Amino acid sequence: VSWLPAGAHPYLLPLEPKLLTVACLAFFVRWQKSQSSSELFLFLFSCAMLMASLRPALVYPCFLAACACMMLGVLLASHNMAFVDPLTRLKNRRALDNAMKTLSGNFAIAMLDIDHFKKVNDRFGHDFGDQVLRMVAARVRRLRLCQPYRYGGEEFCLVFRGRSLVEAKKRCEKIREEISGRPVAMRGVGRPQRKPLKKSSYRQKVPSVKATVSIGLAHSSKHAGDAQTVVAAADKALYRAKKGGRNRGEVSR
Image (cartoon, rainbow, N blue to C red; front, side):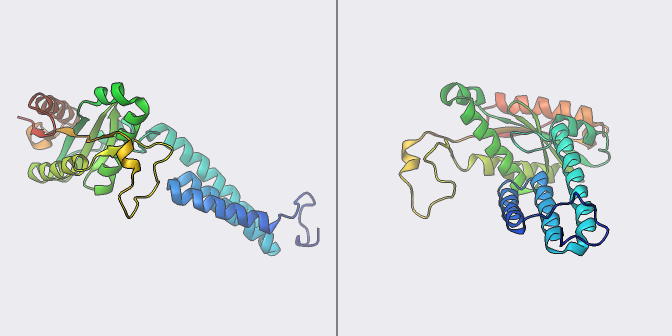
């Protein structure tokens, strides 16, 4: 094989640069759409192999870099399987349990629950219910006002590190307004992926739901800084918010 450096192992066959270029572009597009770290490592792996095919003198360093990218990708995928909820892409209950062990001092925890979620599932099906869950998770994550976790079912846990009760309450209200401010249209085959410039007739033909949430909030200063007690108090406050009419927030007493 002419392009291999002297002393290269005979079973290292030449790689086709054009195919590797296509692979790099494909993995880059997939990474841009999913923003997944595993897709990023696949993109870096294909880039390293492309460099090895274009620069024969760097074949061994590039091959080692490609192997390192694959190993990191496997480790990251394993981590995501253990600590990331696959539906909402938020950290899961196990990650929350680990985070609660590090909570101390000044912090607040809120429990957020989607109102009438069972009725949404019963009326439109579980697929649309999953869309509502993803919408809520995306809007909470986009605001960057807290560290959100998927607690279970239609319930989320919001952690406010280093925030006073007043600050956390204001942030919870912003989150509630952001979620309830816009309806969720059922995503079907004909629904455009991007928001059109003009109002589409598609939206008039599909059902939409104005999802609302109830939030219960508790602060560490009232519960001796114990995270488990704060979560329990926030859960009780959430129950009062739902009993008081939903689409509102309550602070632990």
